[in-house]
Image 1 (cartoon, rainbow, N blue to C red):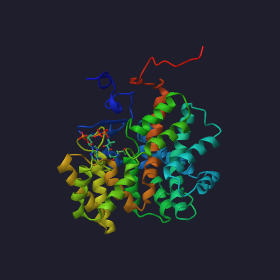
Image 2: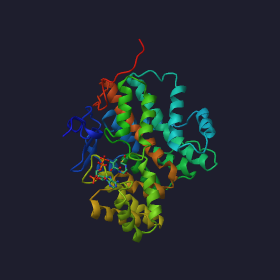
Image 3: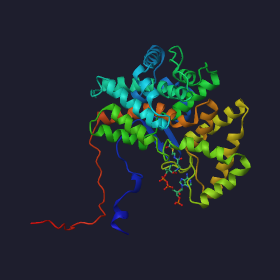
Image 4: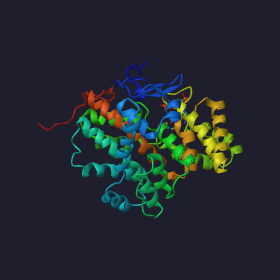
Length: 375
Ligand code: ACO
């Protein structure tokens, strides 16, 4: 065995890079919990606003405290007009995640207290971006269609207002609750690539906005959050349930990875995918359009038979987002607009107990080369 394979842990697989009290994942059980509460209970029992508070403060707000938190988040939803103008000025060719990344960078440049990384300031920024990212993503959806962005409605909950700003219509209870559940499921996921990117940035004691910009950049990639719109495109390419098996076989024969399958940590099943599968099934039936769910289940079955590879969170989230009316090119942006909660929790935790994150590389290049230096 070469020195490189002995010492390099490829992709940092299994490496414990920090201590954390935010989310627990057991890839073999499988289990996912937020602050010790099982994810299935969390989505059944809590509102989005309660989950946000829980992830940041390690307790579930009730009564007056909850109402005050809901009102504060709602009051922070409007974004500066100059940021909306900037989004409008970007070329249509810009990747929607690049536009979102640019908007967050601009929000940081506009914040006079951007460099203040004290705990109250980190919390203020976390609340502000959690409230504002849905406004930005919904504005992107409207601008792409040549429509004016819709101002947030503070009388609506976080999820209901998000659905309203995306579509222009007050959502029914099912739509609002389905979106809320999806947002909760994507809010946090331990040291995934984008969250780790945020931790690396604040590990240098850089500012909150720089960390979030890095998180958005990492989430954008097709091996991470960028996979979700590829899932929907794949379902569209397959086109019919009876074509799913051949499609999967062909992709595997060509050694092509299928989006929405596989996970670094979950090998026995992603608990979020199980919940989203049920949501996709219910929503498809409610919308009277069961084609995408049927294609997805047929492809899942073939993938399980052929390689035993499990669907990850993005697989059934794709048809859920589709039926919720999220534009296909903004699926990943919607994930970013809720993963901001987890990123913020980790940024605050990293700041509270920081040490510079600086691994080593195993050098495998030449050494001792000589240059002709004129004397
Ligand atoms: N399609 C086909 N084969 C796959 C897939 C897939 N989606 N995922 C893994 N495999 C296979 C690999 O080819 C490999 O097989 P081999 O041992 O015969 O060579 C084996 O499963 C292990 O895969 P790795 O690539 O080593 O797994 P890794 O942990 O490095 O990657 C990842 C995990 C990136 C998620 C991978 O499964 C993948 O590329 N999936 C598709 C992209 C995707 O859906 N990403 C979203 C992840 S969830 C999220 O971030 C929100």
